[in-house]
Length: 181
Picture 1 (tube, rainbow, N blue to C red):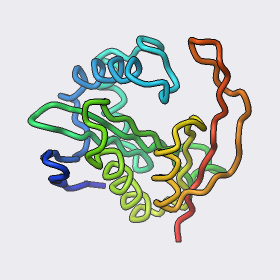
Picture 2: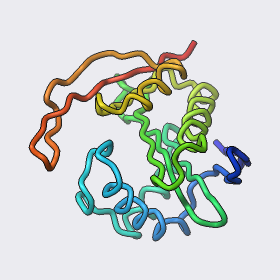
Picture 3: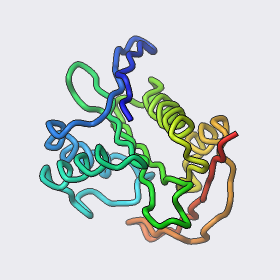
């Protein structure tokens, strides 16, 4: 499915959201490492589970080819500053759902980029017949949980002491889902 590029101007910042393209691979590889080092909200520490440009090209190619996947990027002045993915599971018993994830560079928080990546993903999911979107979020990320709840996600469960951060502290993970109306 083709997603048209969307333009936004929020709190003095102009940005667009569009489908990821193979030419974005190098920037996505660098950005992912950067974002992993900027916040404890990500699953990875900086440099973990590294995906090089070739790996991102492969992901983008596959996501473009699969009807149950969506890869979006947020762009400010020709620089990718965030991205989101919806990934479907190919098993028939799970065909009705996709897993959603989003990340935005810290310097661009507060401009609605994550929210608009989510909105575009929800619209895509609803238009393509996805019945359920799922995600996980660290329990301390209250702003994200509030955004997801306002967008129709509900808490389905809590994975206690699911993550251990560098400081040795354990954190719970919240499992959330959104069902198509």
